[in-house]
Length: 92
Image (tube, rainbow, N blue to C red; front, side):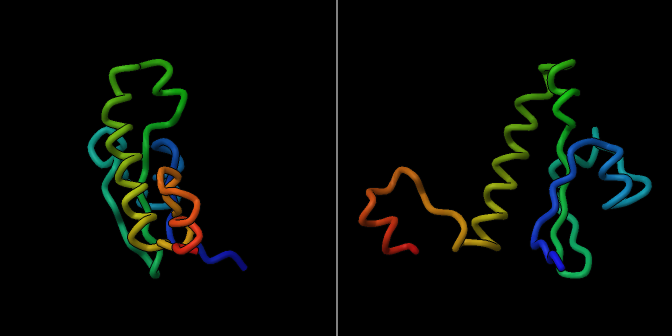
């Protein structure tokens, strides 16, 4: 059985099914919710970003938030590619 630490929903429909039936993507994207030990957030759906490029800066901030949450909850799975190979080996 899969037991994720983080779930990232792409778009309103996914967020309404997984996070909350009343989820509003324009108001709640990038916010974190926790249920049964699983952290969840939602981002704009990729097709929405293609239709409306003005949403891209907000989505970049949301993605950085996802990166931060991964670093917080799963530090073993995030190796900094900018570190020299010898330093990365020590992180493993």
